[in-house]
Structures are given as C-alpha cells and as structure tokens.
Image (tube, rainbow, N blue to C red; front, side):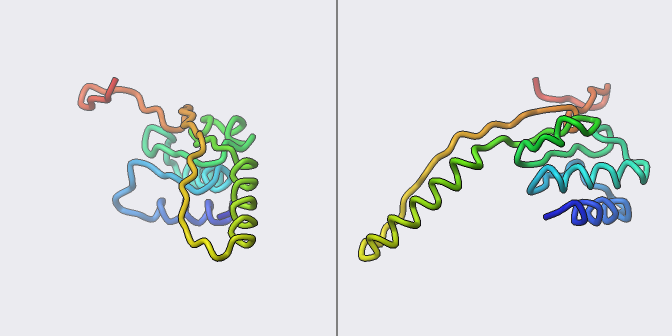
Length: 124
C-alpha cells in the first residue's frame, strides 16, 4: 500500500455515514496519507478516529499527531526468510513447517490516544 492508497482510504472514510472508531494500516506511509486526507475533511485524529500504522517509519514521528505504530525487525525478518528459503531448497526432501517468532512492539503515540469523557470508560 502507498500514500495514494492512504488518500483513497481517507476519502472513503469521509464519505461514510457511520465512521469507524479506528484505522490500522499495513504501513506508516499509508496511515499518514489517510490522516492528512481525513483531517482535510474535518475529522479530528484521534478524537474522532484513532489511527495506527506498521513499520515505525521515520514519518511516524513527524506527522502531528505522532503516529501509533508497530515496530518490528524488518532486516532480521528478511534475513530469516532468505535463510529459510535457502535451507528448504537445499533440503527439498524434508517437508516440514517451522515457527519463527520475532520480537515486535506496539509504540503508542498521540494518533490513538483518546481523552476520557464522562460517558466513556477507558481501561487503565
């Protein structure tokens, strides 16, 4: 997904009668483009719609409000994928599945933090 996809997503949300509570995108670039488009249409982030992305790209710290995102080891993911593929090609007679768990973390920033109201109970 790209910034064009984010803009189109933002436009689609603006046309909805009933808006979603939140938006989670496959990458930060798409999330930022969606935020910018929704804000042009009068949607307040995060008061109206919370937004989160994925990748922890540098742009996530530049956009206002700062973007909530998932940080994951992209380089390590690629290395492990390539290594697994090479091992599979070398040992094609061994058909087996393996599980690989990589550390990741949710970085909560302003784009998903809603203020408490008298009518809303938030956890914590």
